[in-house]
Image (tube, rainbow, N blue to C red; front, top):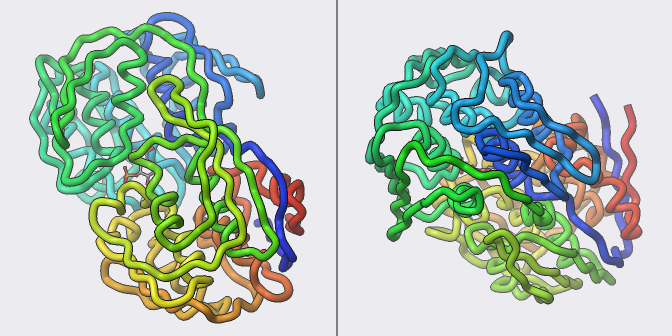
Length: 434
Ligand code: S3P
């Protein structure tokens, strides 16, 4: 178990790249595997989660060349996957298990799929139920709700599904299964979740229709390989955006960050809180918006964050809670009960760990209430095995007086493998110890 120690800093200055977007990296392997031809991917995120997706697809018979500068996926078309000879292990990756379940539901063979302690406690019913309705046979603990899952697929028929949660993982699993189904598959969500799957499917030549919050596609469409340049992950950039605001004497420039409007809620929220944050060089690539973000030390003001913006910043809430702790006034985050079923129960873990550092934070049923303005004091804190909690605490450590020691910090590699190098390059002090 690795410990990360972080010291209070007088400020961070500099320009940096942010590792590739995790959601897009996963999907580039998955769609590349189902496409005909060679898909070349640059700026792929080499994190534990995405490497687990590569491992799973290799077990399904897909050849993938991996080098730090480029990944080549040798797609075998819609019918090219092979029955794996052993259990697939997704590690900590919810995106891998849920999206891959959609693909496996369309395969005429049996697959066993599992993950780490956290994955085996997270709800899978949200994907297994609709996939069963489409005709897949899926067995898991708690009547198909918990991994390990056994999936025997094939002979799917399209369904029209109304999802009770705004979840891109649910939407994507159903759309991926829909590629293998007879007829039309349609999903309606209660609020817009991230739309990378739809954008990328179109890039691979699939016709995906969208009407309001309803997305549909016709089964049997083939995918054609394409080149993918993965933008910087706004969910990783979020840690530096908050650092940029809350630390003194700080100015950061983050290059080529994904600005897809279904993901950019953090920018809206920080600007509404009074952040000095601007976007430059905005451009489109592969259907995705990207640009440079410039942020500097700012006096933030508390706000209320609720409603349809929540899915647009769901992964950033832990670090937004930290921004709120350093703001004047009170911040309330509501309609975010989904946080309870992430890599950890993030309502509980954020509240528990930030309060150790001196933050006035209260757990709500569907969110958090933070009274800003207290001084943070460095101490020993715990990641709960959740990468976004560890990263939030590391940024808190740059602000807090003295030194902050983060236990079980190796989970940072799940999404931001070069985090410590980036912090040091910008002038901060952070160090891993065994
Ligand atoms: C993801 C979707 C989100 C997000 C997760 C990645 C994706 O989850 O929290 O980190 O890549 O589709 P939900 O779709 O369950 O909200």
